[in-house]
Image 1 (cartoon, helix red, strand yellow):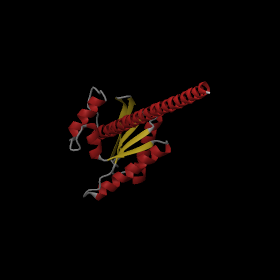
Image 2 (image 1 turned 180 degrees about the vertical axis):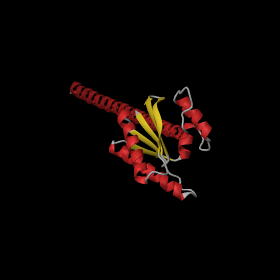
Image 3 (image 1 turned 120 degrees about the vertical axis):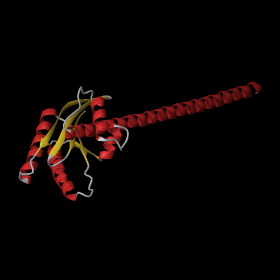
Image 4 (image 1 turned 60 degrees about the horizontal axis):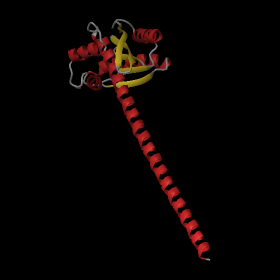
Amino acid sequence: MIILGIDPGLAHTGWGIVETRGALCRARAYGCVTTKASEPIDQRLGKIFSEISRAIETYHPTQLAIEKIFFGDNTRSALATAHARGAAIVACAQAGLEVGEYTPMQIKQAVVGTGAADKHQVIYMVRNVLALDHDPHPDHAADALAAAVCHANLNRTKELSRRGAAAQIAEAERAQRQLELEEAREVTAAATAANVARMREEQNRRAAS
């Protein structure tokens, strides 16, 4: 499975491509789309759309992992991020990617093991999980890779749970078939015993007469 992780932002939109093979995750590429505040908003969003589309065309991901927006005190900044996020999602939607959305806390929890992890802990774990020989830069790209790793980990957990549930169902069905077989054998044995008893009784009556 090839996953595109995105850390959206109007000034900096980080992206990262992660490929999974079983339990292994490896980074194929990552980067950051940078736009200037002096540029018109349509050009900035168009650049984000175009460069994300180019990454999709190059690496052919099938899944998208993108950060959700946290609307805190800085509403203006959140709205700008929402614009960038929308441009990136449209690029992914046109390519048919399945979308997974995660809060920063969910990503930290899945990658580091705690939702309170700091930036350095996230980068350290991303580097180790993806077997990189360097810290991924810039930070926006590292966050995008973290989102992709989060998506991979959660998908693997779901798959293992699904397999476990399927195995339990298969075992229950096997036990039910075995029970039905044993019941059928008991019925057959009882019927056979009854037939033998009737035959003996018939033989005894004939012998008596």
